[in-house]
Image (cartoon, rainbow, N blue to C red; front, side, top):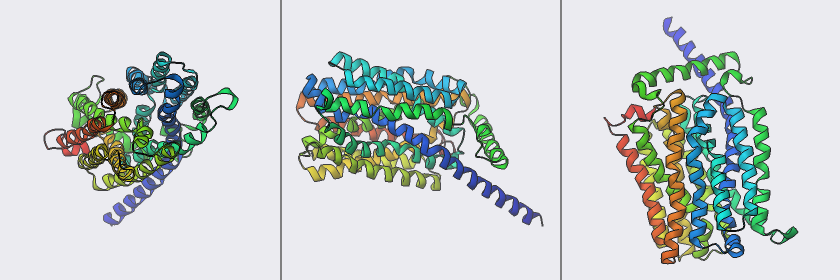
Length: 442
């Protein structure tokens, strides 16, 4: 009789769990992904504007690489303070503020007149957007239990490859407005792609609840189950990791994760912000190069979702990161030697993009498995901030090396090595006695 009662209670809990997570997934993930989608377009559309800016403003590869990467300096400096403010004032108001601010600054990109104004606006754009991504990751830890987290973070992070895949054709179409109303095509690009950011910033105030307690679309049983589950997880983290899960100063594992994230971000942005020009060097000229970008990142979006689901089902995190990093490294390294063969270059870049982006949603389960409260907000922001120095280093190194050698080969090998570094660090963290297998799987 007791077994029957336990079975009924377990079935009831499973039904509530499924219903609650389905609602969270439907209500939060599409909107957050859309928000990050437009943010990513606003930070990366400079890659499609590059040719026009080089033509009209006389930018060299060095100037472009420095300006594209300097976004991340502003981003890094304001990342941790932004996330700590979000923890105090709530996600709804702070994310809305971020979106409106970055939209206004992104509009300013249409009015740069030379290297100095280019560097300045890109720096301020990074400062304005600081806190969005780690804020969302921290926000999702308040809504999604650990065993399901990689899958839903993966769905959210498909905004990265989808924005690039969709942004390529859209940007190519906008660039065709060159000369209309006295504006160059690259100026139209920044003007028109800013509008969605401003609109979504206002909408955020009306659609994003700060916590499960404010979610009217959850019933009482669902709110109670979600609150109890997340509270139990926080208590377990505190017992397992002690003071490290609650203090604001980072522990050694957080600093190691900073280095791991540096590697993958160097590979991600080193390729992404140069890809139209890499394709041009391979013989895929504009506007076809804008449409060609959709292929590797469309495949990467599918790979992210599938690999993060597989990680959730298996419970393994670090092994999945290592495998993805090897694939990403192999693809990007191969692309360095295939720059003169358009089809083979496309295949190699696609493999590199799939592996690199598959790392991201699984990686972000690692700090969330260890940190609580303000430490989670600050730790996630610190990892993202320090890691995003790789977002500066990747584009800058490729531009610097290209100006010195006349090709992309050595630069691609450098950023490919960064992706491999991430996998090796994850493998080391997953060994018994390091972070501990249980610690990185939850």
